[in-house]
Image 1 (tube, rainbow, N blue to C red):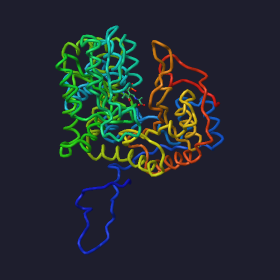
Image 2 (image 1 turned 90 degrees about the vertical axis):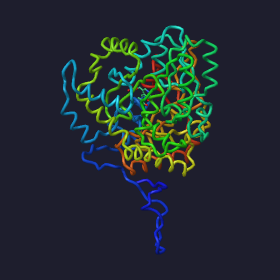
Image 3 (image 1 turned 30 degrees about the vertical axis):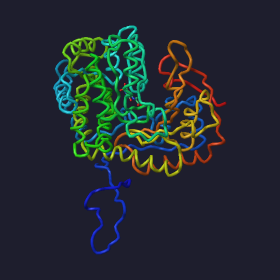
Image 4 (image 1 turned 135 degrees about the vertical axis):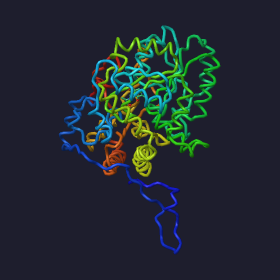
Amino acid sequence: MATTDSVDPMLEPRPGGRRMPRHRSWAEPFRIKVVEPIHLLGRAERARAMEEAGYNTFLLRSEDVFIDLLTDSGTSAMSDYQWAGMMLGDEAYAGSRNFYHLEDAVRTYYGYRHLVPTHQGRGAEHILSQVLVKAGDHVPGNMYFTTTRLHQELAGGTFHDVIVDEAHDPTSTHPFKGNVDLDKLRRLVDQVGAERVPYVSVAATVNMAGGQPISMENMRAVSEYCRSMGIRVILDATRAVENAYFIKVREPGWSEKSVAEILLQFCSLTDGCTMSGKKDALVNIGGWLAMNDDDLFDEARNMVVVYEGLHTYGGMAGRDMEAMARGIEESVQEDHIRARIGQVEYLGRHLVDEDVPIVLPIGGHAIFLDAKRFYPQIPQGEFPAQTLAAELYMDSGVRSMERGIVSAGRNPKTGDHNYPKLELVRLTLPRRVYTQAHMDVTWESVAELYAKRDEVRGLRMTYEPKYLRFFQARFERI
Ligand code: PLI
């Protein structure tokens, strides 16, 4: 598997002058028990499929995709231990034993007292926003996420980006580009008043910035400031385990702590969280909202029965809750998380070696191609990242996702496109699904497209849905 500079004493030079490799490879901490066949369509068929999908990779049929790097959401391979748990689903309408297992797992690994299960992350965001955000409120956050911001806006709030400037610069190698800029946060609170800020929305390993982590030090500073102002801190814990791993390997003072200990400490600096279980927690569906405050719990638990399901299943089957409880346990294991992020690094290193412009440092769940530097001839209004995602599929059957102007949507007040600084294509790695050979096919295809980059022109949008347009928008070639 991918190489790594290791401090494992087994790998130190040995006496007797024997030549030792400078690196030793590591391997995934699992072996494959079940396989799912995938097929590569011919080039002409791929071109036809892409045209029929309106040059939007979300509209491709999964069967037409060879290597699916659209998302790491709900695409993980479950372990035999999780599948065994599926057989132990207690499908009672009320009081399923699997709910209590999940509650235990959340308390043990994330440390929150109260759990409100939801069908997935956006269910949790909906309930949280409805309970906490009032019309005219302001919600600061370390860069937006599509569904999170939309729920804040639908509840009458205005989102404000208070992430550090480095996060908007794909070439900055700041190790914690997910950090909150405390000056920006203070300025906003001074301007609108703390009473109009229901909470600060802090995401772990910021998705739209390239899977970039927030440091423990920064989280502590945000927490102290917010507590002094009487403002809640709500974590988007969707990829908090990956964030904990980056704290361990990048932040001084944490290398001797376990990922599980770091996660617990990190969450203790917040008042609650929303969670899409479909990422870190290694399941195909599920999510939750968690908090320490009894009154907030009461309100959220009341709201969940309206929109999701009873408060002991929240839209999940008992077996889904069991798989997630077990997935949470597995997600914090050191060898798992090291291999997961190691595979992302393997793909990224090869692209760096080929001089392909990507967001640095390499993030937790994905490699982000910098489409502005990849296709400088395509203006942002002609969707360079959307174009690159389409080209990649046509070249090799690899499906990726646009994370640029299409994802950024329109300003709800002016109706203009939001023009984000980052115009990216995300190659997102499902957990425990693909091998090193799949990574090789991927970087080779991207490198070839980069070599042929001058020939490519942009796209024109022909259909635009009102909400979260990136999912269903259609395009044609210019
Ligand atoms: O897809 P959901 O509803 O389970 O979760 C929404 C969600 C919330 N926060 C963050 C940081 C996400 O990444 C997220 C979903 N992400 C998707 C679907 C993705 O492809 O990244």
